[in-house]
Image (cartoon, rainbow, N blue to C red):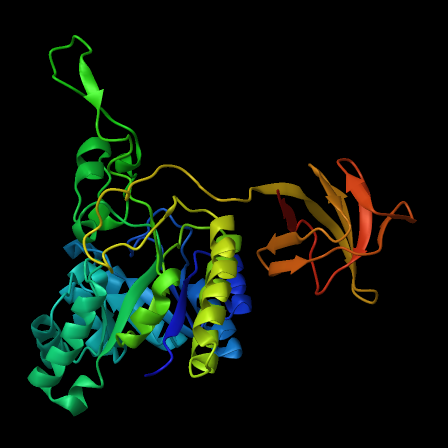
Length: 415
């Protein structure tokens, strides 16, 4: 049983920094116009090179998502992206369109088969492995833990033990789920002209709908308890050990549209859970301590964006209490201010408090395109040269910070 990697989404360089600092083993990202998260910031090809260098310095693997459907007119752009990824040092691309697979083979870059291919059985895996040499598969979200075990054992019978051991499974562990089977949905296309299968979904399913008889007399009813097409977010933390023991090789966190604090908290929680499991699972009191840790880590997950949590399909088909609406986060991120200056010799930042207020020892989050992601607890704050315990809107303070900050970096607090 090998320790699975913790894979983080990154939508920009700030999220990348947050993922690295939270302990991600790997990150996945998209290039503008060529992936299933068209609404995310995504990266340009020059930015991809910068991302790869930063990951290499941190010892983090990097995967490019080329996981949408591609039209004929896009073939030149797709091919350039694949060969640019190879040159930049991307470790693998996540894809399923045969054109992307073809270009990847030509470029000599490994392919991880996207969940968009809906692979949910050993026979399909064996076929892709034989014809394309694919060794990692992002299993369909509809696979249960029991299914994963059966697929693993069936692969041994089909491919033999030696070859089967080369096959690795990547599964979604946390984040948004689609009410449609593996995202095969046309609701956004028909209603808004934006296709979910091209990464442009506007999520009309997340709304509450009133069903009427169509006669114009306003008679009708609310379906179920309200938001019946808006599923809760997936969270495997309560049973993460079962996935590990089923032979999963990578735990993937969804969220390339999410904020840096979401990345930091979710990656950090799963990082600690996986590390604790492998370091302590043979101890006599492991079960009790692991459950206590998972309770603490769940609070971290509750603090950032979520729609409530579900076990997805891992324990069988979800029924009854499965849908939810809106953001259930226990903490709200609010703007505090921005950096006016940084004094490198002193390690001190001059900060404008533009909104809200902050107290000594209250956690502050800093985000900046060059600075990345920083969290610190302000101590020994000075306002007009006078020590203060708190600062309010309109104040300008000086405070020691853990790393270099830059002018106009944004500061946030959580309430």
